[in-house]
Amino acid sequence: MTTLHLKDWRHRWSWVQRRWFMVPARGTNAALLTDWLLTMSLCVGLASILPASAAVWALASLSSVAGYVWLALAITQAGPPAASPHLTAWDAALLSFAASFGVQTAAYLGAFSP
Image (tube, rainbow, N blue to C red; front, side, top):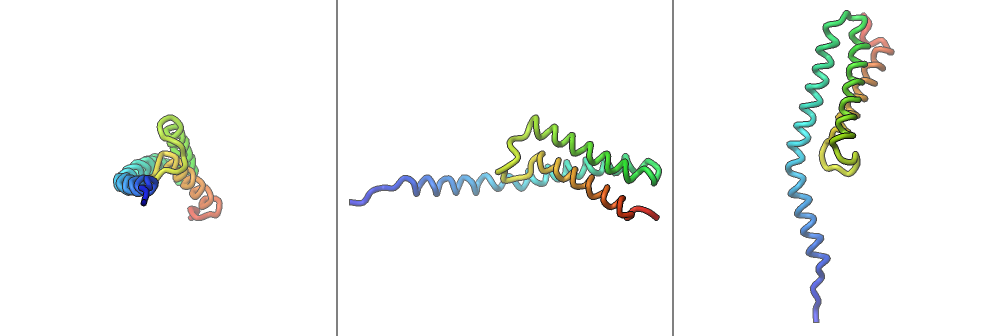
């Protein structure tokens, strides 16, 4: 006599659920990237009104501050930083800190000097 294995049905159902939940993540990724790009464009806009000698360091500072703001948002509202199928505020904070580090490195290497 054959028996019914319920483990197989649960495994299939969880696979279907995971696939269904991954579709809205594309919209979440686009929304978060749009918000991060708006944040960085605000930083670039604020740094561009300063003199050229201070604009680069102001941009690095502003993007670092934006990273801390995204980090505060992630700590207070987002879930854990790992095992998320889409981008979260943790990723936006990481992108902001990476942009700050990139601007500081480029300025130190003399990429912005005339």
